[in-house]
Image 1 (tube, rainbow, N blue to C red):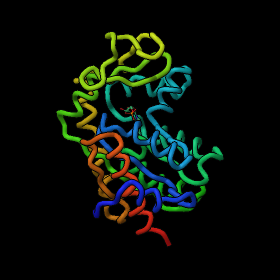
Image 2: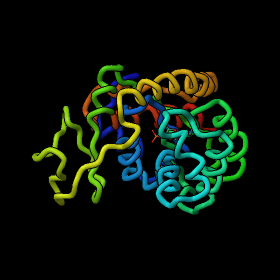
Image 3: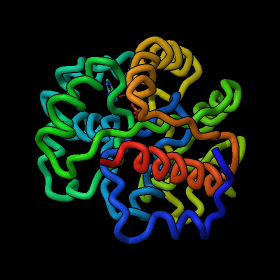
Length: 243
Ligand code: AMP
């Protein structure tokens, strides 16, 4: 990919740029959530994270949450049928008409096919194909990111004990609330999730790669640099697939 400066990028992706549905792919801890938030701000489109939707269901104690809870804490994937219906339901909200950032979905080939053939293009605006951008980070880096991650129980600010520690261990710098560790952010669950990721998500990568709708972004650089790499990939792919 040719180098594009940030100002050129902004010029390329002007106000009328329609990002459409964008799938962010990557192993646990590559920074999908952070990057999704930056794209949300830039393009004014929502982030749809199936992990967040599932955790919301668990917190509310819904029937779906009860089904998902045990599977999630073991590091395995929740049934395709459950997540497909959850995403279908979410896409019915009006904020998705210019596009949306998919974070953590689709994670299997079945989910990708359901998204492409049943919901993304045929039913919901914008009628643009789903693009996939994969954020790539070396394994050891990921392990530190996952096991070191702590989240403020109140403002949800994310810290890392190795690279971005709070001033006082276990306490949020901003509001003094206690920091929490996600139950699945342990090494054992990470190893399981990596196995699941490699086995289940490889076909999703191959699927979008074969359709000519796939790019990789180097995730082992600053948050800003990763963001630029992702935007370059989106613009390139949207140009390539625009009709
Ligand atoms: P995440 O927050 O995206 O890392 O997801 C946390 C957990 O939620 C995963 O380990 C899975 O158990 C479950 N999950 C999230 N998204 C999906 C999905 N698209 N398909 C199946 N399970 C999912």
